[in-house]
Each structure stands twice: as C-alpha cells, then as structure tokens.
Image (cartoon, rainbow, N blue to C red; front, side):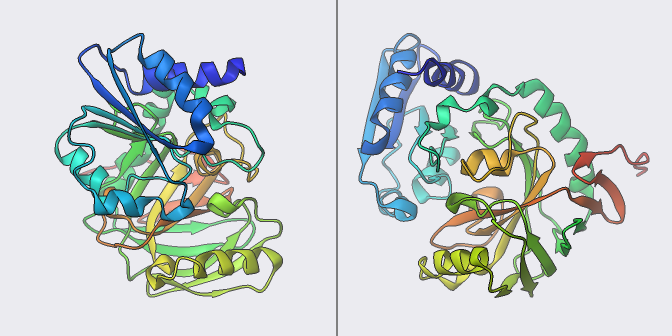
Length: 329
C-alpha cells in the first residue's frame, strides 16, 4: 500500500471531513476502489465507532441514477463521503442530505494514469490559503452581473450570472457549511441561456483527459452549438453524445482553479479543474451549485491562462490573481 494513499486518506478524514466520535459516517464507492475504501475506513475508525460503506455498481457517468431513485439512502448518516469515479453531489440523495444539514464530501476518484487520486500531491494544498484566495475572488463575483474571459489561445466568452451566488470548495466541509468537494476552486452557477462566444479548449476535457490540441467551441444562447473537428473535438463530441441528453451542452457553471499544487495534465479530473491559472465551464446539471439546470450529468472543460473581468473590473491576468481597485458601494 502506498504511503501517499494513507496521507490522502488522513487528509480526507481528519482535515476535510473532521470526523467526530458522534458522527455516523457512510463511505460510498465502487469495487474498483476497495483499497481506498479500506484505508479511509481504517482512519475513520480511529475517530468514530460508526463507519459504514456502500459499494455500488460501477455504471460510469450514470452512477448517479441509483441515488436519484433512492433519495432517502443517506438519511441514517450524519456524514457522507462520495468516493465513486464520478461525482454524486448533483443527485437527489445528495441534495436531500444537504437539506438535512449532513456533512457531504464529493470525492470523485477518477484518474487516467493508474494512480489513486489519494496519492496526488494536490491534496496537500493549504486550505487556509485557498480560503483567502477564494474570498478575494468571491468579493468581485458576488456583486457583478457579467463575466468576460479571454485567453492567449483565443477564448473570448461573455458569461452572465445575475442573482447567482458564488461559493468555493477546498475539501473542508466546515468551510462549505457542510458541503465540499476535493476540487479546490471558486464556482458560480451561471444563467443557462446567456453564455456567448468562443472557447478555445487547451486544458482538459474533464473525465476524458487532456486536450491534445487547441480546439474551438462556440457558445450561443447558453449552449454549445459547434465543436471544431480536431481529434480532441471528435473525442469531446462523442463523449457528450453518449449522455443522450441535449442539456449536457448547456453551460451551467463558471469556475476558477485555486490549487497551486495542481497541474492540468489530463491525468485527474479533480486536479485539472483545481489547477491555479485555469478557468472552467461546467456543462449540464448545476442544481447543487445554485442553478436551475437539470441534466443526466455534469463535467467541466478547462482552459489555461485566462484574463478574467467582472463587470469590466479585471481580477485575473494570464491566470494570476490581481488586486483590482477597491469596490465602492
């Protein structure tokens, strides 16, 4: 067993979830991740006597169907770690758990290089530093109505978020008022019918890996209307078609990576979208992020080195946070 898996499990149980002796913890996973489950349970058992596990069938991106059909499954527990390959946080069961003020950590374990996500160094990012970075960005996102993003590769997107409230993830459920994700980022749900412009995808394609060449994607009236016919574009188009849901083409989230230990290499979905110096557009379902869009799934497209403007006030330059002039209200 890798010592780094133990390190990652310790971070999840002791620092992110902060499991207490009175907690009734449930860890959800699939048979592909039984080693991670064993180590997580080992650390959890040192802090609470009530540790349960639920091993579900690996149905890939459709794993959430069970948790939509059985929305009461988390009711007996005070803390849930969702450690399947794909995120469960947008499911009805997760939404119910959050409404009941349970602690819920989204821990998607999907990787493309054969390593456990718990081994990755990005998990050691200082959560206090990420919280400070997030607070700077959220101050400007909270009060703006439009976001304009450009990149050296050619991205030029206009995004609208009137009456949408930003949040952030850094793994720590306490910082997220009970809900967090292993992805260290600022996020905001966006108006589902208004994203306009060009994205040049040069980072990663969410779960399916790295963008091998810059690929143009056009957004109109909130949804993807055209994907360039590159090898990367063909992979992305085929992946999206497999959802059998036209709503997967709708932009539902805008996110900014805050993890300075992360690298966007296409090896790990969570690491890619967390990488400092990137932004992402989340496609499909955004209900758990405060949006109004349902869909059969959710995944992110990640781009590098953005210039980001909130109501014409620049907050990021080529992927680096800058301090804008003071906001006066």
